[in-house]
Length: 410
Image (tube, rainbow, N blue to C red; front, top):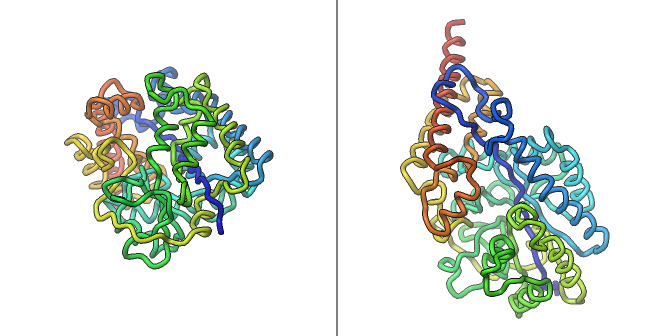
């Protein structure tokens, strides 16, 4: 009989933010993502942002994980690492990439598959989506020397069709949000099988306890503050009473960036891992370990798309207003022209614009959800995000037309 355990899954991602790209830049400058040459201190400066988060989050958390792996043979966890993150790490912080490699080489860290560019392509172009998943799997194999067996879609956006696609494409497991309206009376603390599939298994995020870490940990107005390792250990044990696994899925930047070091987040994590492993009946699993250790407890159907964002847990964080819908429509309308160029730099720029963060910055929600969107956005307003993005799209289209015209003329 398998021990009850915790699945820590960390999502590691950085987008290439679009600089303040003016209408006057169209057809003249094609450096959509290079704010450094104009203003090094801009909130759109990708190099500056990456290096800042590297110091606050990636380096200290990777060091802590390496320490815990050496101290505790039963400590395991899973990452998803986007292609855009890997590209930035290769340019600006190769030491961080090396520490990720050491973690994976230890055999305690698994890498989960996703789209290379952190895109919403599944909902717009299945062929482009499949290409990006293949690109990501190839990049992970090249950098880390491992094959991916479990899939998570961008923003944990999931439905029955996605599960069928993942099953048909040989994945053993898939991740999704354990959303109450879908689960009804059931618990997210079991392994399930997606409806209409043959082989794949489903792991559902326990969003309540995940969000205690990701959003509430350092909030002094929270009635449970301060969170301690003992308290969280107690909650985890209670959550797993007569159940199997606790899936804690969070952004990796939770550690040090969203929850700053002075909240005690690193010390908390260190103590909690030791506390959880101090008993004989508790352990940690990678996503693959959990899938292989437990049988399916039943089928789950999600006929409509569920994500891990905002109170609605749908796609409205990215597609909820007319700006976002127009931006996505224009982005995918030019696909054939872009791919026909066979220009690798142009195609790469177009794919970087598919990263979901760009339309996320255009969100116009209010109240708590709106505050979260504003916190992450490097722009003064959602409208600025839309304008700079659309100017970049227009230039991408101009470049594609120029290249394709010259190919015909020659």
